[in-house]
View 1 (cartoon, rainbow, N blue to C red):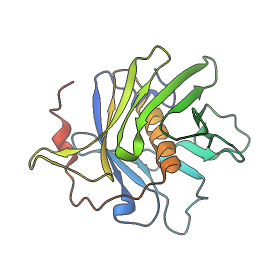
View 2: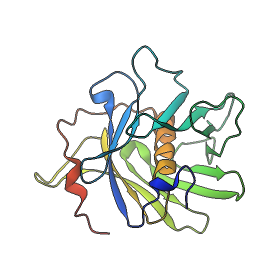
View 3: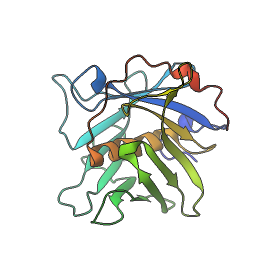
Length: 205
Protein backbone atom coordinates (compact mmCIF):
# COMPACT_ATOMS: atom_id res chain seq x y z
CA UNK A 1 0.00 0.00 0.00
CA UNK A 2 1.42 3.34 -1.04
CA UNK A 3 1.50 5.94 1.74
CA UNK A 4 4.20 8.24 0.34
CA UNK A 5 4.76 6.96 -3.20
CA UNK A 6 3.89 3.83 -5.20
CA UNK A 7 7.40 3.55 -6.61
CA UNK A 8 8.76 2.65 -3.17
CA UNK A 9 6.30 -0.19 -2.56
CA UNK A 10 8.10 -3.44 -3.38
CA UNK A 11 6.46 -6.72 -4.35
CA UNK A 12 9.09 -8.85 -2.60
CA UNK A 13 10.72 -8.62 0.80
CA UNK A 14 13.40 -5.97 0.42
CA UNK A 15 16.58 -5.38 2.42
CA UNK A 16 17.91 -1.82 2.51
CA UNK A 17 21.22 -0.75 4.03
CA UNK A 18 20.84 2.48 5.99
CA UNK A 19 24.03 4.46 6.61
CA UNK A 20 24.27 7.57 8.75
CA UNK A 21 26.34 10.09 6.83
CA UNK A 22 27.53 11.58 10.12
CA UNK A 23 30.32 9.10 9.46
CA UNK A 24 31.59 11.66 6.95
CA UNK A 25 29.74 14.93 7.69
CA UNK A 26 28.45 16.69 10.79
CA UNK A 27 24.68 16.33 11.20
CA UNK A 28 21.99 13.68 11.00
CA UNK A 29 22.11 12.78 7.32
CA UNK A 30 21.43 9.34 5.85
CA UNK A 31 22.13 7.40 2.67
CA UNK A 32 20.02 4.31 1.95
CA UNK A 33 21.07 1.65 -0.57
CA UNK A 34 19.44 -1.44 -2.03
CA UNK A 35 21.23 -4.79 -2.15
CA UNK A 36 22.77 -3.87 -5.52
CA UNK A 37 24.46 -0.80 -4.08
CA UNK A 38 22.05 1.64 -5.74
CA UNK A 39 21.06 4.74 -3.78
CA UNK A 40 17.35 4.64 -2.88
CA UNK A 41 16.92 7.51 -0.39
CA UNK A 42 19.03 10.27 1.05
CA UNK A 43 18.72 12.81 3.85
CA UNK A 44 21.05 15.81 3.90
CA UNK A 45 21.28 17.80 7.12
CA UNK A 46 24.59 19.57 6.80
CA UNK A 47 26.03 22.55 4.95
CA UNK A 48 24.84 26.18 4.69
CA UNK A 49 21.23 25.17 3.94
CA UNK A 50 20.81 22.81 6.89
CA UNK A 51 17.36 23.03 8.42
CA UNK A 52 16.16 23.38 11.96
CA UNK A 53 17.16 20.43 14.15
CA UNK A 54 13.48 19.51 14.52
CA UNK A 55 12.89 19.09 10.78
CA UNK A 56 14.27 16.59 8.25
CA UNK A 57 13.48 15.94 4.59
CA UNK A 58 13.60 12.53 2.93
CA UNK A 59 14.67 12.68 -0.72
CA UNK A 60 15.00 10.28 -3.62
CA UNK A 61 18.45 9.73 -5.22
CA UNK A 62 17.96 12.80 -7.45
CA UNK A 63 17.20 15.15 -4.57
CA UNK A 64 13.42 15.24 -5.07
CA UNK A 65 11.71 15.85 -1.73
CA UNK A 66 9.39 12.99 -0.80
CA UNK A 67 8.59 13.65 2.84
CA UNK A 68 9.19 16.22 5.57
CA UNK A 69 9.17 15.09 9.20
CA UNK A 70 8.91 17.74 11.87
CA UNK A 71 8.76 17.72 15.64
CA UNK A 72 5.55 19.16 17.04
CA UNK A 73 6.17 21.55 19.93
CA UNK A 74 5.18 21.44 22.70
CA UNK A 75 4.50 17.74 23.14
CA UNK A 76 4.84 15.55 26.22
CA UNK A 77 5.10 12.43 24.10
CA UNK A 78 7.69 13.84 21.67
CA UNK A 79 5.17 13.85 18.84
CA UNK A 80 6.52 14.11 15.30
CA UNK A 81 4.47 14.67 12.14
CA UNK A 82 5.06 13.74 8.51
CA UNK A 83 4.10 15.89 5.50
CA UNK A 84 4.21 14.98 1.82
CA UNK A 85 6.89 16.76 -0.19
CA UNK A 86 9.07 19.64 0.92
CA UNK A 87 8.00 21.72 3.89
CA UNK A 88 4.98 21.68 6.18
CA UNK A 89 3.46 25.15 6.21
CA UNK A 90 -0.13 25.14 4.99
CA UNK A 91 -0.24 21.34 4.83
CA UNK A 92 -2.02 18.71 6.86
CA UNK A 93 0.15 15.90 8.25
CA UNK A 94 -0.27 12.46 6.72
CA UNK A 95 0.95 10.70 9.86
CA UNK A 96 2.17 11.32 13.38
CA UNK A 97 4.55 9.40 15.64
CA UNK A 98 4.58 9.59 19.42
CA UNK A 99 5.87 7.66 22.37
CA UNK A 100 3.33 5.16 23.60
CA UNK A 101 4.15 6.30 27.14
CA UNK A 102 5.70 9.42 28.64
CA UNK A 103 7.92 7.10 30.69
CA UNK A 104 10.51 5.34 28.56
CA UNK A 105 11.06 5.59 24.83
CA UNK A 106 11.04 2.01 23.59
CA UNK A 107 7.58 1.77 22.01
CA UNK A 108 5.99 4.21 19.58
CA UNK A 109 2.50 4.68 18.21
CA UNK A 110 2.07 5.78 14.59
CA UNK A 111 -1.23 7.27 13.43
CA UNK A 112 -1.92 7.45 9.70
CA UNK A 113 -4.34 10.17 8.55
CA UNK A 114 -6.27 10.74 5.36
CA UNK A 115 -8.88 8.67 3.55
CA UNK A 116 -8.10 5.58 5.59
CA UNK A 117 -7.13 6.12 9.20
CA UNK A 118 -4.75 3.43 10.39
CA UNK A 119 -2.45 2.77 13.32
CA UNK A 120 0.98 1.17 13.48
CA UNK A 121 3.14 0.29 16.45
CA UNK A 122 6.92 0.26 16.77
CA UNK A 123 8.33 -2.03 19.44
CA UNK A 124 11.91 -2.67 20.50
CA UNK A 125 15.09 -0.70 21.01
CA UNK A 126 16.04 1.53 18.10
CA UNK A 127 19.17 2.63 19.96
CA UNK A 128 20.34 -0.99 19.64
CA UNK A 129 18.98 -1.24 16.07
CA UNK A 130 16.53 -3.92 17.12
CA UNK A 131 12.90 -2.99 16.57
CA UNK A 132 9.85 -3.98 14.56
CA UNK A 133 7.03 -2.02 12.90
CA UNK A 134 3.63 -3.72 13.22
CA UNK A 135 0.26 -2.89 11.73
CA UNK A 136 -2.92 -2.82 13.83
CA UNK A 137 -3.37 -6.58 13.30
CA UNK A 138 0.11 -7.17 14.78
CA UNK A 139 1.49 -8.22 11.39
CA UNK A 140 5.16 -7.35 10.86
CA UNK A 141 5.57 -4.61 8.24
CA UNK A 142 9.27 -3.76 8.64
CA UNK A 143 12.24 -4.62 10.82
CA UNK A 144 15.36 -2.72 11.86
CA UNK A 145 18.36 -4.88 12.71
CA UNK A 146 22.13 -4.61 13.12
CA UNK A 147 24.03 -5.32 9.91
CA UNK A 148 26.54 -8.15 9.70
CA UNK A 149 29.47 -8.03 7.28
CA UNK A 150 28.97 -11.40 5.60
CA UNK A 151 32.55 -11.61 4.32
CA UNK A 152 34.10 -11.23 7.78
CA UNK A 153 31.09 -12.39 9.83
CA UNK A 154 31.43 -9.27 11.96
CA UNK A 155 28.57 -7.15 13.26
CA UNK A 156 28.97 -3.54 12.17
CA UNK A 157 28.48 -0.50 14.38
CA UNK A 158 25.14 1.19 14.87
CA UNK A 159 25.65 3.84 12.20
CA UNK A 160 25.01 1.16 9.57
CA UNK A 161 21.95 -1.07 9.85
CA UNK A 162 19.38 -3.05 7.90
CA UNK A 163 15.82 -1.95 7.14
CA UNK A 164 13.83 -4.98 5.97
CA UNK A 165 10.52 -4.21 4.25
CA UNK A 166 7.77 -6.79 3.98
CA UNK A 167 6.02 -7.06 0.58
CA UNK A 168 3.63 -4.18 -0.03
CA UNK A 169 4.89 -1.86 2.71
CA UNK A 170 5.90 1.64 1.59
CA UNK A 171 9.69 1.99 1.91
CA UNK A 172 9.57 5.79 1.96
CA UNK A 173 7.10 5.71 4.84
CA UNK A 174 9.30 3.20 6.70
CA UNK A 175 12.34 5.40 6.20
CA UNK A 176 10.40 8.40 7.48
CA UNK A 177 9.75 6.44 10.68
CA UNK A 178 13.47 5.66 10.92
CA UNK A 179 14.23 9.41 10.81
CA UNK A 180 11.83 10.05 13.67
CA UNK A 181 13.19 7.16 15.74
CA UNK A 182 16.73 8.42 15.24
CA UNK A 183 15.80 11.92 16.36
CA UNK A 184 13.91 10.72 19.43
CA UNK A 185 16.76 8.46 20.50
CA UNK A 186 19.50 10.93 19.58
CA UNK A 187 22.20 8.34 20.11
CA UNK A 188 25.77 8.77 18.94
CA UNK A 189 27.03 6.39 16.31
CA UNK A 190 30.17 4.34 15.96
CA UNK A 191 32.90 4.39 13.35
CA UNK A 192 32.02 1.53 11.01
CA UNK A 193 34.54 1.76 8.22
CA UNK A 194 33.75 0.63 4.68
CA UNK A 195 30.37 -0.94 4.02
CA UNK A 196 29.20 -3.08 1.13
CA UNK A 197 25.38 -2.95 0.82
CA UNK A 198 25.35 -5.68 -1.85
CA UNK A 199 25.97 -8.37 0.78
CA UNK A 200 22.23 -8.38 1.60
CA UNK A 201 20.94 -9.55 -1.79
CA UNK A 202 21.07 -13.16 -0.73
CA UNK A 203 19.48 -12.81 2.69
CA UNK A 204 16.74 -15.33 3.24
CA UNK A 205 13.16 -14.07 3.41
